Amino acid sequence: MKTLTITKWEFKGTISSRKFLMIFFLQLAVLVLMIMFFNQFIANIESQKTVSLSPSLYGFASMDIMDDSKLITPNIDHELLEIRTLDYNESINRLKRGEITAFVIVPGDSRNKIDKIQVITINILVNYNDPKRSVVIEEVNSAAKQASSSISNQWIDSLLPEDKTAEPVVSQKGRGEPLPFQIIRKVMIAILLFLPLFLFGNMVIDSVVGEKERKTGEILIAMPLSHTHIIIGKSLAVVLTIAVQVAMWIIILIAAGFEIQNPILVYLIIILTAVPIIAITTIIAAYSKNYKEAGIGISFAYIGIVGFLIVPALGYISGRSTVSNISSMTLVMRIFSGENVPLLEFLLPIIFILIVSLISFWISIKLLRRDDVFFGPRPGILRLLIEFLGFKKVYRIK
Image (spheres, rainbow, N blue to C red):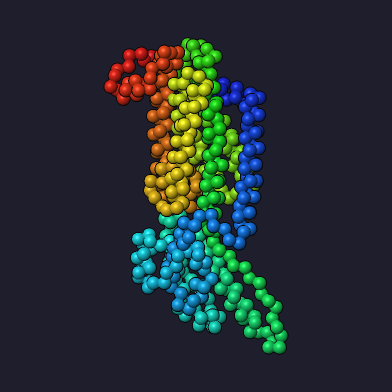
């Protein structure tokens, strides 16, 4: 109850601040500008006939195909996919070993079935552990549609009188979205979703460091509240603020045309990710003497946190890896892309978030309990580390 009282007090004071409201709406304006820039950037890229965003991605996705009748093989973009024609058993084994993304099987009597106006079933066996599968599936579907259109046009031509010239048929070859575009779209959406988590570090600094500089820390500690209530209450107020902004950002992104599947689950995971970030920020704020020192510390900490979130996500896109699932950004990316996430890979980042949150809040509470940290003279980081590890008994514990 005491924790919620502090949370209510801090949250009410935050949203009633003109400075916060101005920053809040400026951030929303920045989001709108970023969306406009991103859409224009993608439009400019897709308007070019030949664009090479990353030459190293040539033939990145691969598949095997059995198409003796050459029904769809000529229509597949060989620059996008590395294609091999092998026997059935060898291709199945390659698929099981994860050496290829998919195995496409076209009936050998396809041409005879076409002449008899029979249905042709094209089977595609997909490795669903491979994040590149969507590229292959879209390209195969596009090739099949183009083959169907070509056959229909041939039938129409055969029905026309010989003395008449058929109207030219204009067909447009489709293709699966290239992997560079997937990286840009998925990573950009993920960055926009996680960006609010790093915009409210100043709230934590003002909430903790501000108590020191305004000399109101003595009053706060003298109140009938435990240090745990103070830290958790202040942190929850920041979480609520972030929750409001993330909700608005998701609504704006969906309204702008970005495809975000399972938005509620995505929203909950992002808010859960905010907890350890706030906890780490609280540690820095509790140890810092002033705003300047806290700002420098948080800048370095956020660089590491951003790298921890983004690098595994990029690693998962370029190639599946169990380690890459430790990042909650990877999990969010997979969920809003509509991918089915195994339970173990879903729980891995959640468990990591909970562990980091508990350890970080424990450290911040221990720091706040020490008068020498809060009021000075402040001990060095090495000494605190030794004491936290239990090599030296800490006597000044309330």
